[in-house]
Length: 146
Image (tube, rainbow, N blue to C red):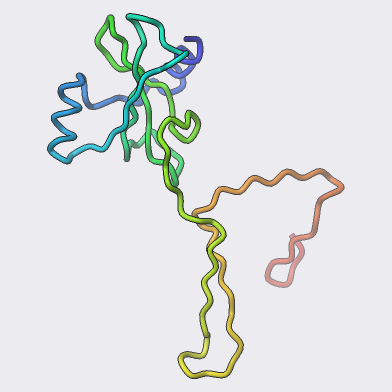
């Protein structure tokens, strides 16, 4: 698996604290780890790489909306090899907060007749913006164009 070789270089400092399946299952039953696992399907290399496993709340998972980091298990060496962030691999289905939610509030308090203001919370939303020079715009911040 060429992508695994690239992942081992990119994520060489991303260690799995659970050395064996038994260690992983023991810690999961004690409630100290949350993980998901599955087979590699078409990516399987029989008797070498057959299963993946992703651990929640791993420090190598950098996406704030998807905290799973994943490994594949080397059946010959009986060891885990870093594969990557779930946000890239999409092995575990993660429920992400809605980015289109709108909260309204009345600035003056209960019973006021002033207009309501609308607050859109996008702090936890991933945004991708593509622009060309023709699409550029002026950004007006605190009385100045940036």
